[in-house]
Image (cartoon, rainbow, N blue to C red; front, side, top):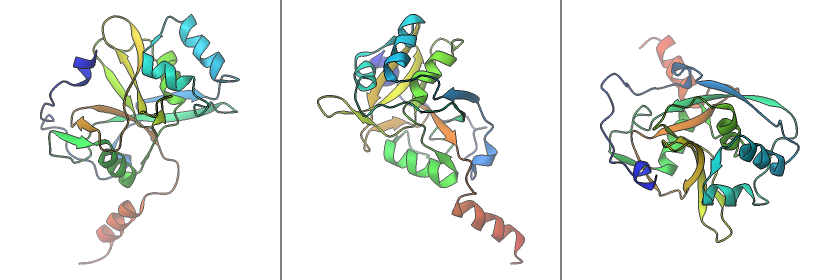
Length: 199
């Protein structure tokens, strides 16, 4: 499993042109969060459905810092690669991925999105690994971890991976971000103004 997470990055397909605005990316999936009364019930549901959680994922789901929403909310999710965000290098730091995604109008997902997506995405193709773009949660030893919803071939799993700001991610990694429902980011507004104003 670790080997699959550390596969050498491949160049992005030529058709994957860098995006300038979140509006260029279609919503991939809409899921509900806030549907459980607490983290324990959410973890029990994962167990009941036979969705395994790796050691690091299990640890952060049991931490007091992992919380669930108090009311049901629908969250629109998008899947995007660092290459599609405009990075040309083979790898890019997690902090840079997050910064660029926010600039074009995406948001980090709540930590609850990881296990909820695992529960609500039962037809995940084999070999797919989706990194949840989220603020990292720390293990008991203080290691920052983010979640990965995966089907490694041995069943549906939720695993943890390096959530340090400087962690290097392959440019072809697939990240799950939340779609922002706020106003367009400043960079997008400036681009729109430039297109309207005469030269």
